[in-house]
Amino acid sequence: MTDISTMLRDSAMDFLASRHHMATLKGHIGKPRPVNRTLWREMAELGWLGVGLPPSLGGDDIGLRESTVLCEQFGRTAFPLPYVDASVIPATLLAAMAPVEQTKTLAETLQVGNGLLTLAWQERAATLDDAIPQTRLDNERVSGKKLFVAAVANDTILLVTVRNGTRLAIVAVNAQAPGVSWQDHAAGQSAVSTVTFDNAPIAGAVLLE
Image (cartoon, rainbow, N blue to C red; front, side, top):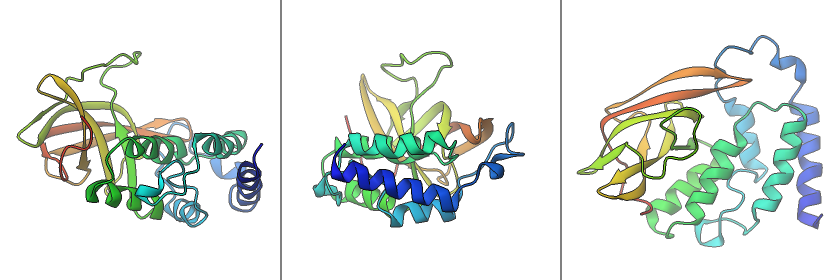
C-alpha cells in the first residue's frame, strides 16, 4: 500500500467512526434514500470527490487504486452514499474527455460537491450489453429512457449515453431541464431512478464521441 493509500484509508476510518453509525440505517430499507448533502460536502472538503481527475481538470493525479481504498472502507460499514456512482465513475469519464471549459466546469462541480454528477446509461434490466443506446440525440435534444440511475436530484447533472446518428456519444443534461422527469426506487440503503428524457436540451456541447 502506498503512502497516499494509507493516508486515505486512515482518513476514511476516522471519518466513518465519527460521522456514520450503523444504527442510522434502520428504517430506510425499502424506501428511497436521498444523498446526505452534509456528508457529501464534508467528503468534498476531504478531497475524496473526483479522485482520478487529471491535473488538466483540477485533479491531483491520484488514480483508481486510491479510490478503491475509500470504496473498501465504505463497503465495510455499509456507508449509504453513492461514492462510486457519483464520484468514481464521473471522474473516470471526465478524465477521458478533452480539458475544455465545459469539462473543467463539470470537474469543479464534482470536486466541490455542491451538485451531483452521475452516469445514465442502462436501458434494459438484467443486461450490461447496450453498445448503442436507443436514447437518441437530435438537434442537441435528448429523447429516451434510462434505468437504475443513481444520485438523481434537482441539482444533478446527468452524463447520458446517447445515439448520435450511428455513433455513441455522451452528453450532459441538467435534471431540472425541460423534458426531464424521474421516478425514484428503493435500492438497498439508497435509491436509483428511472429517468425519462422527452426532447430535453443538453447542457453545452457533446462531451465525448
